[in-house]
Length: 119
Image (cartoon, rainbow, N blue to C red; front, side, top):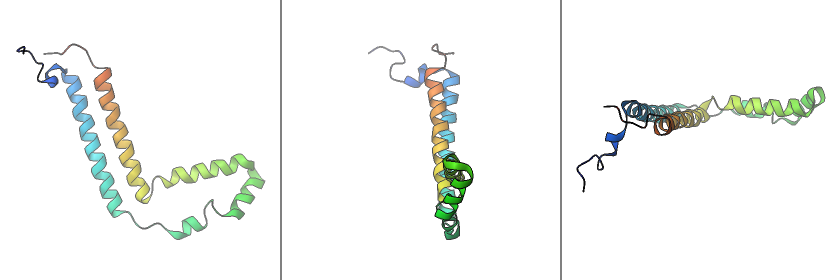
């Protein structure tokens, strides 16, 4: 065994990498805690929204008659995207966005940081 830093891989990281790893960990933890709080406090879904939304066949027929199939598709996409920001779906959205942001921090820290340790 050599007396180098082989046993401690963190000693080979630059301060910038360490900061990015710490930022990624903090972002992931905060996002998951926030998602859990949002999930626990989310109200029950409203039945009127699902009853009178894009799923109503009369609305789809009128929308298709006025704007064509593209208008129906865009209305469905808009309703899906709007649904991501309410209730329990918001908790999942916050969790996924937080994990993606933390993954980006880890990715940048691993692949794009300096190869030579500073110190």
